[in-house]
Amino acid sequence: MEHKFLIREPTDILSLVDLLKACEPASQHIIKAAVFLCLELLIELLSVLASYSIEVRDMKCILRALQARNGRWARHSSKLLQVLQQVLRKDGPDVFFSFSGGNHNGIQIPPLNRWSSNAGWTFSVWVRMDPINSGNFEGETPHLFYFGTPNFNYACYFVGNFLVLSAVKGKSSQGVQRCIKYEIQQRKWQHVVLVYVFSRWGRNEVQCYIDGQLVSTLDLNWPVNNSEHFDRCFIGCSADVEHRNTFSGQMGAVYLFSESLNLQQINSLYCLGAGYQSCFKFRNEVDIPAGYVKYLFDGKLASLLVFAYCPKNCDRQLCLNSISRENQCHFMHTPHALMMEGVKVVTTHSIHSTLHSVGGAQMLLPLFNQLDLPQERACGSTFVDHSIW
Image 1: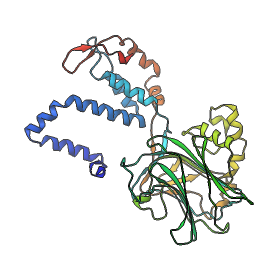
Image 2: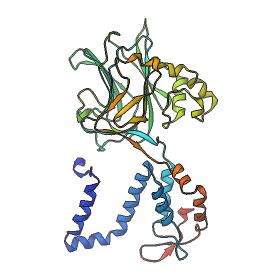
Image 3: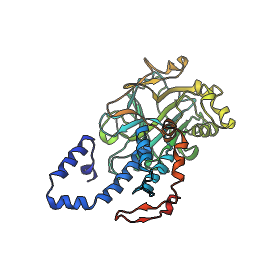
Image 4: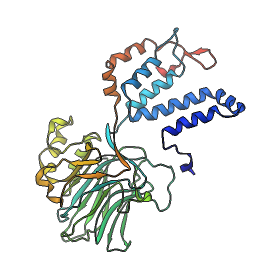
């Protein structure tokens, strides 16, 4: 039902406004009577949009609207201040991959000529689930990744708010599935790391880390010949790239390491934050405690990279793999990936950079002189809004 009430194209909103002008007079009267309710809803919408990105012109409009006139705050000023407060809570990267969730929605990784499972491997990504609908429908399995050969595939996908790992051998759909018993929150940036630990004499296992903490350990083998080529590799979808298997949301930098990382390394990766998009070569790129730096920039992580697909290192639909030349031996041909039509790179502007562009924090100082001023009501009367303080 929710799919019927989605506005997918921005131009459709203009058509809806034109439709309102053609409504019956009685309907238009109802709309005019609800103008203040509509304004509040628009401010809530503005809060959501500004949490993604706020440009210089948007900041100027908000600051202009907050200026007191005739000794009183403008109507809805407290709501606009809440918008700025919400923007300050932004915790995601300024540049990210956006997955629309439709058909042909994913990143296609070039064929890998070998995958050394004896040393294990580690998959790391910052991810934010943003489903088109709030319900969970049977048969929908949005994929985080899919790595496959002609005889085997290894995948990680969502069932509801839980991650499921699967290993399928042969052409049948039968295989081994393991559910990670940790609920992933929707519309929140989280750091997901999956570590495959190889054991020569015991059972192989997969460790799942969420936001730097180990949340689950699963027994799962890797039944694949190391000589097989992985020619079906995707991020955000499976090999059939159908709508029910495609991811809807955002991702930051996507990393694959050719070795099992330990808890200290993974916790240090999380400490870097969602905004880090580089290859662990230069420690002066980050401002984190020295205790984390030694696990990240000692040269080991950089030497273990199989791929590092970062949103800021993209050229149109091409995702450039910025690893060293020595590490490109994992690929049969080019190491660069391809964004399919449902994926795009989104560049946003944080309130910190935007506020700096309009003159810095000093542009907010005049607002402190207005704290004790009354605010105008919808009926024309005034009141002092203590929530502004």
